Image (cartoon, rainbow, N blue to C red; front, side):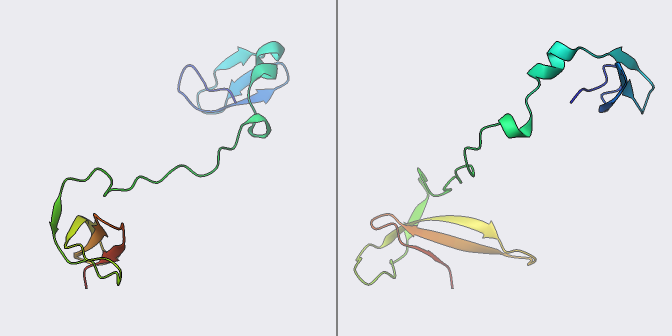
Length: 105
């Protein structure tokens, strides 16, 4: 893929030149440079990126009893998340002892 040096638009090939359809700029094609361009087939797929846990390393905790049956902890880290399509936020808790997650009811 080649971008126009004049306006930044994507250029298209026409015979032996790269042509910008936006501003008309033309540049000669370089077959060696084009051979070195990476295609999607040559790219590495590392899978989906890791999702950050907003409660990890959180120092905001509060007294909130863990609802897990086998946990007696009364401290939980929390974060506020906007409710999709709603006009209010919901509080999400993570127990500091067992890692159990729940939301405010």
